[in-house]
Amino acid sequence: MGAKDALDCGCQGGAGEDRCGGSLPDSPRCAINYHFGMLLGVEDFRAEQGFNVGRLRRHQRALHGHGVVWGYPVTFAPERFELRVGTGYALDPLGRDLELPATQCVSLPAWWRKHRDDEEFEDIANKDDATFDADVMLGYSTCLSRPVPALADPCADGKADIAYSRICEAIQLTLARRDAAHPAPPPPPEGYHLLRLLLDLDEVHNGPDGQPLPDDQWLLDQMDAIDALPPDQQDQAEDAMWRAALARAAAATTAPGAGLAGEQLLLPLARLSGVHIHLDAGGWKAEVGGIDIDDRPTLLPTGLLQDALLAPGVAGPELPAGPVLVADGAALAGAEVTLTFNQPLAPASIAAAAFAASEFVEASGWQPFTITAAPVAADGVKLTLDRVPAGPLLRVTVIGTGASPLLSAAFIPAGALDADGDGQNLTTTIRQE
Image (cartoon, rainbow, N blue to C red; front, side):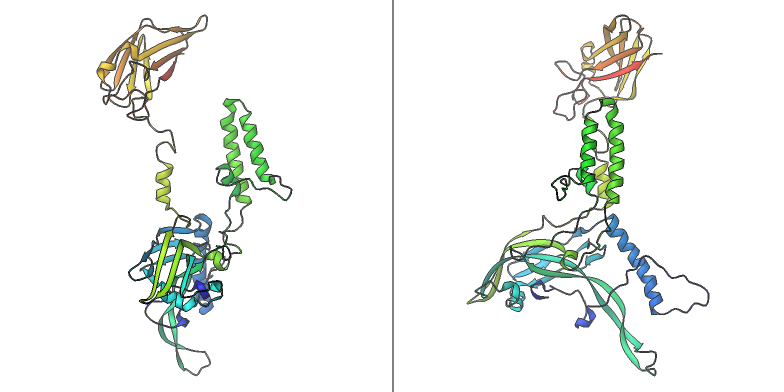
């Protein structure tokens, strides 16, 4: 493998390159159709195995993607000149599991002595004092295990042979030189471009004529058209645009992992900068200038994504720290309005100056009320108006700004987003038949 030599092939418990081989079948389209009296051979069992393995991998690459799920820290032990990769779990671009159950390490001087004469290092004149950058790459491998006696051939006259009875999934860690002459492979293409464009995760894709591709132009036109609509029509139009963008994005996306091979199937775990391996009077030594994992692909578990999507301010508006009316928290009875808040109030702040009320009268427009205010519970206020409202609309405003706002029991103004922020004036409408 040249300079991209494995740190450890992953075959535990013995030597032999023949063990780092074999492959699991991956054929999710067809399963065995069992029937009574059916004779089963090796290919039948592999078909059953390939159906289940293939379906899992197809699900993972299509619905989850690829990247590190947890772990895989990369460190350097200067006292031993060792590069170490800790335990972890990841998925490769084909949806295959990449699990490392124990820390693996490599001696950089020993690795260099093995590969110093490789073609990729021909430009380094002094092989006893070399400095370069490299990537730690993670890939998929399999290992054969549990040798058992087996018949080598149906026509072998009963002669016994040894065959491995298990095939185990493993990982392969490699070092790859990185510089202008040895660039990193391009990442696998991202699907759902139109949706990513709508989320500002992608740039507009242009065709050979320099103009946006048809779907990209369609989205740009849709966004411009929505901006030109009256405000009361924009929400419905935006909802329709999102549904159409999702459909078009999925239709334009090809099968994940299709056509990928070689280094494109590897995950970059870390960029090593300033790798310095040299020979002095005390022997071979190595230093690493820096280890950067920030550009590695990462996958988040669905539980964390759910928590993120349901966080205040994401799935819905963030609740203010200051008091606000609860749902249906304003009730009118005659000339009295009862207000119910979501938290206890500071009684001394419940005064007429902390509220305002007006009604709409068709003949004369908005008419204000003179009000008095009094607490009716720890979280309730009763406003008494100077007359019974006669108009179809009554507007009541809770004052959270200015010199005399309504305060919570913790002295936070009404509608304040945080404990140290200013409040807001909160208005609710009561409709009368």
